[in-house]
Image 1 (cartoon, rainbow, N blue to C red):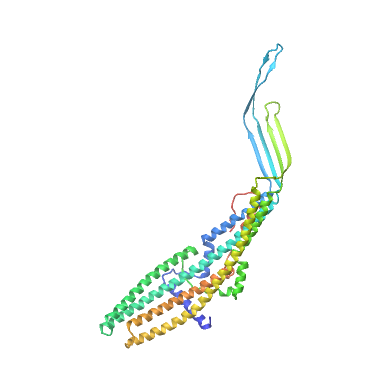
Image 2: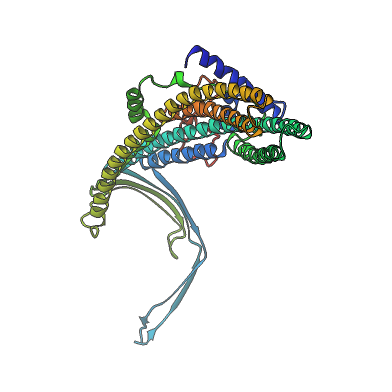
Length: 471
C-alpha cells in the first residue's frame, strides 16, 4: 500500500474507532492486544485443553511405576475352632473314638515386595511413549492457542466492523430523512411530483429496515465477542494488520508450515508413539524376570504346640511365554498397521497445512487489493453524489438519481469498512496458517502458561493424590 493509501487507511481506522464508540458501547476502551490477552487467560476451551495436557502428563509417572517395587502389607486375625476324632484300640481289643476339640486365635502380619527386573524393555518403551504423548499434547495445545487467538482477533474485528456499519446505516437514515423533507418542500411548491415523494419515502423505509438488520448483526457479534474473549466488549480501538510478522514469500511460508506447524508436530509425535507401541507389544514375547520378597509373622497359626511362627524369603522368578493363543502376535501386527497409518496422517497434515497457507495468502492479497479498489470507489461515489445533487437543484437530475447516488456512496463505504476488516483478519489468518500465531510473536508480554511446570511437579512423584496447580 502506498503512502497515500496508508494515510487513508489510518484515517478510516480512526473513523471506525469513533463510530464504534458512538454505537452505545461502554466507556472503557479495549485494544486488540488486550482482547487477545483476555482470551488467552479466560477462554474455557483453551483452559480445557490445558487440563488435557496435565492429564496426559500423568501417563509418565504411571509408566515409570514399572521401575518401582510393589509393596503390600497383609494382616489377618480371627477365631478358629478345630475338632478331630481319632480311633484307638484298648487292651481288651475294644476300639475307642476319642474326640479332641481345640479353639485358637490365629493372627498373621506380613509384607511382600515385588520388583520387576526385566520384562522385554516394556517399561522403558512405555515411558518413552508416555513422554512422546505428552509432547504431542503440548503441540495440540499450541493448535488450540492459535485457534482461540484467531477466533479472538476475528471476533474483535467483527464487532468493530459491525459497529461501524451500524453507524453508517444510521447516518444514512438521517440523510434520507433530510432528503425526504426537502422533496416534500419542493413538492409543495410544485417543483417535483408525488412520485418523487413516494420514492424518497420508499428509500427511507428501506434504510430503516437495514438499520434493524445491522442492529441484529451487531448484537450477534457482541455475544460472540463475549463467548470468545470472556468479558463484555468496551469501546474498541482500531487494530493494525500483522503482515510484518509473516514470511515475505509464499514458498517460505509453505516451508515453515510443513515443518513447524503444531498440527504437523502432533502428527510427528503420533508416529513416534505408534512405533513405540510396536516395541511394547513385541516385549510381551520376551521373558519376565521378577524378584519377590516376603516377611510374615504369625501367632497361634496351628492349634497345638506352635505359638509363634516367622517366615521370610527372597525368590527370583523367570516367566517365559510360550504360547498365549496368538493374541500377542495379532496385537503386534495391529500396532504396525497403526504406525503405518500415522505416517500417512503426517503426509496429510503437511498437505493440509500447505493448502491452508496458500488459501490464506490469496485471501490476504485479495484483501489488500480490495482496500485500494474500495477507496477509489468511495472517492468517486462522493464526487458523483455531490454532482448529482447540484444537477438536481437545476432540474437536470431527478430525486431518484439523488437517492441512487446516495445509496451507491453508502454501499462504497460499507465495502471499504468490510475490506479494512478483511485485511486485518486475513493477516492474522496467515500467521496462524504458518503456525506462528502466539502472544510472544505478536510482541505481547504477559506470564504465559508453561506446561513444563506441571510436568516437573508430577514426573518423579512417588506418592500423593493432590493435584498440583501447574498454571
